[in-house]
Image (cartoon, rainbow, N blue to C red; front, side, top):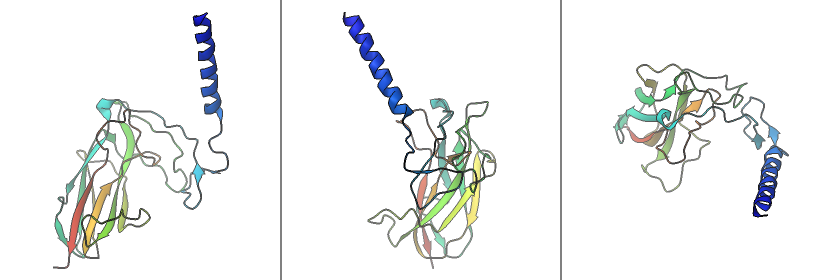
Length: 199
């Protein structure tokens, strides 16, 4: 009798889960269409895709400039980024194919994708009281090329004195954040603070 009841409960639970899965989570939202929809809530049905093993999780470090380094205003400098376990050089058209493809792995089990550099002005304090507005940035650039010896680089200059946060943003081929196999892990991205000085 207990076995029968347990079986019935299992069937009901599976049925309930299937019903939830079958529900259209995009009801009432603007369907994603490959463009970057900024001003209304939208919904994508693109599957997460292929997920690497823990031995192939992506990790990034910014090697240049150094954390806390002071650099001169209006002078070019280079940001260098070293990445492991990301097969770089995979980059879909962000104007027409944004979030359009699932994450993919190469033959060695590494995510196929690319990275970005984003720089935000923090003001006159290295650690401001409030988070910076994500809509505002001093510099942004996709690192779309293949890494050379695991390193990507970008040259830029900053035109206002103060503190800045430089971050990487690794992404899959179709620009979505990387999907990893476990929750407890190190970050796939890195951030540093620098100071831009007039003197």
